[in-house]
Length: 219
Image (tube, rainbow, N blue to C red; front, side, top):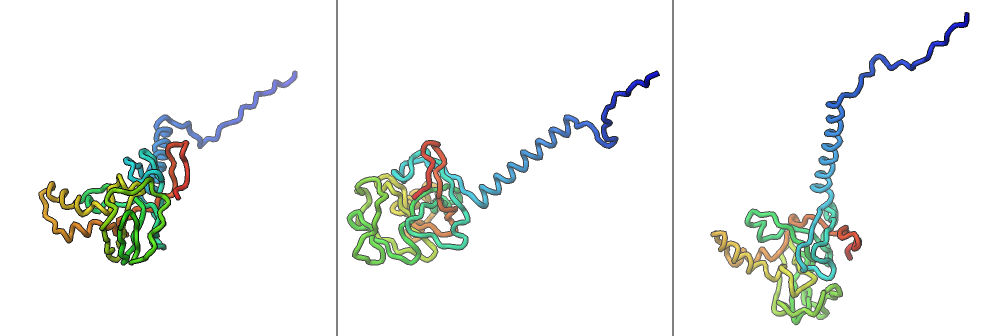
């Protein structure tokens, strides 16, 4: 008689156990948790994510644009004139609030910056600062302003000078906001809030990533 061939069924390893629903759920939770931790690390230590709510930086940046900045840029180098940066708004910071602004660095530590007839003059220079990024003719708060910048501080101005809350206005704003908050502040203290300290700079803005049709590096 012919021996019947036994069907060979590959045996499962004795130690292998079927994956339960609970194990699958735990696996997904671990993946999601890892992704969240990585995102938080990038957002808090590597990248700064900013949404522009106003037209203060037009035409360089439009309202609603979303930007990525790099927090590590100034770890080993100093901020430079012309850099577009995300920073803590000094007046709100002094009141214990966290409000982020985005402007262009115009004045550097130790410099004297004069605004005369819609031109910027650095340290008494006879030649005004070349500013090809300005949106239009500058007519608002464009004359008779002098900033004597403390060490480790910067003057920030928007590219849309006719519609920008920047260093020109912050001292006056500080006096008003402190009065509204029922707190006292001297004129000298208010004037000191015209400047952004280096520790308040969160990062240099590099990339516009939204809207998708306008993805580009910032100049």
